[in-house]
Image (tube, rainbow, N blue to C red; front, side):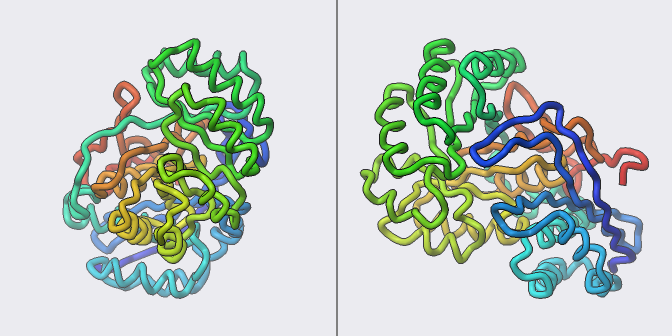
Length: 359
């Protein structure tokens, strides 16, 4: 079954409310969408939302590449060779994970529909459901507690708290959350490279009794070796994020002694499902657990990440809340949210329902 057409579009998607992380405040995002239509009418959908400050690729570059004459050369190719097509696309667009992810996701969606099964089914499903964390940006203590209450009312049980600007205020926020809500919430922390080693040691010591589940990328990229000052037990709860961009980075971080016990995989960092599964395989053989994250993304790419996550036996954590922040999207479906947990549908491909005229 051959590819009939490849169409790219760029959409400006406002957020329901702005939020602050260690580097900046976000109020809206742009997502690039890729639609691949087969000769029999099957439509595979892909999406990309690269973080320029992390991967060096802009939204404009992603759209330009997906709209290029090079992209059109894949018209007429057989969807049954989708892994080879992904490899060829990645060779044409190296070091451009947003461009790679859009094509990879659309091909996986189309191929799953061609087979008549969900993507996770042909990858090999290992998990049925896991709780996702929801994110609280950097804000004063009172606002942190208020947001936590809203999430509690919505049925969520895992919070990811952004930190990294003021370590002392971060400590107070975590301790107040634990005091107010007891053990209702599992608490994760994402410092977004905001700490020094001294800050991190102070934070970990002060919050020791708060039972933090994990801490994402506490130090700036390039300072991973400093984490080896911490004992092995502490490093087990640290998650590599911004420093984990590809299977090659995963190989380096998997070497003993390991600075991180957890890998945070994002399709927008590594270039889609195929390369994410390569990272997952490296982590599995190194005894490293998986934590699947996202940017502010469409349901399309969030669903793709969920299919990949549920196909990996070493997946332990998911933070796939990026589509919750969007005021609008181009599809519905993909997954269901039940009591703070994400469940895939049994529909073929990614199980998406395009909204009329949105793409």
